[in-house]
Image (cartoon, rainbow, N blue to C red):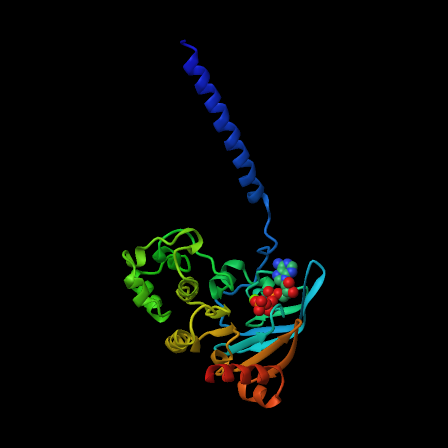
Length: 292
Ligand SMILES: Nc1ncnc2c1ncn2[C@@H]1O[C@H](COP(=O)(O)OP(=O)(O)OP(=O)(O)O)[C@@H](O)[C@H]1O
Ligand SMILES: [Mg+2]
């Protein structure tokens, strides 16, 4: 009788140890992965102004060529639009600008410095990236936004929330900015998640901003409102915008059209419409759609 309880306890402890060591094994496996992007940068720069220069860049995933001979030049403050069909390589292109992958051939330079030589800390601080599939942590909206800049004050957070057209919706939540979003943001709509991610990128005050279809789940009116709000902010940054809605690219300094990983058309909105190719067609279709 005296031994029954200790036996149960030993069984229980063995069970906990087994489960713990299995979990620890998995965590260690993750911690042992060394990142593909190595922080080898030695360039002595403190900030990036935002001049982007891509020189005949090639890229492939596991030997399958995706991007071919991409040239792109954007002076600080300019806006580059990127359009193209599904799977044409738009997301891959902007991921290369953010150095989420290493280019295979060719070169990307920021302010004339090869991207590989820029210390990652400076690179990550200077580039705001809103990915196509957004990621939120299961924490409050406030902390999700503050993730972009841990030193941001509450006033700054309120301001970016306003810029991203979220003020009314967040005020409607019972706890406002302190509402906890579910795992990966499940309790929010797609458009709300996208705009919180946008707010997170903006609060960083980056000199290069990349939006990969960042407002696709927001309706046209709201999108126009946000772009209008952000006009002053965007004026001072180099922006690359991937979008399916050509309307939001009309005022770009250059729009490039990607097809199968190659740039097939490039120019301002007006030039592309006159070229009467892929872009002009798509623009006509979208205008028709609007009228209908
Ligand atoms: N991680 C990956 N590994 C292997 N192949 C990939 C990977 N990511 C994308 N691809 C392939 O690369 C090509 C380009 O993909 P990418 O995501 O850049 O296209 P996209 O233009 O952004 O498309 P969408 O309009 O659907 O967002 C696709 O054919 C895709 O299958
Ligand atoms: Mg994409």
